[in-house]
Image (tube, rainbow, N blue to C red):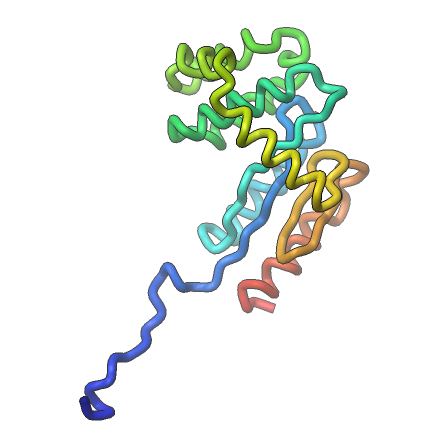
Length: 179
């Protein structure tokens, strides 16, 4: 093969720079509901270049957070994870009062198989995913929600979310070569 015949290394879209933002969240947390504005802004800014991953961190003080995390996992299996998360977060106060009934109702409202969500809450098929997320969060020092992890840096929004979006943008820009 002559040098002119050598394959050209053209970056494919899959090899384009990307970054991952893990969002340690729980669906009964009013601060996580407030953080949705930041997540929407980050999605608008970066599109597919920034992968935003929901990580479950149900807090003991919220009685229905663990069940909500399991229901969110079932919603993700059904292809509607983020819409479900956002719909539940929009009704945080109601979740505190209605628990599983609300989780199933929200599933029905957004077009999920609500019976399957209900069954998942009973049979516990998503317990391991929720437990693994929580254990990983504890291992990296997550103590409250929302907490973000990007580029190996943990940013705690449990006490204050002020300035977090700007810090995430700074880190993401660096990871994506936009700095």
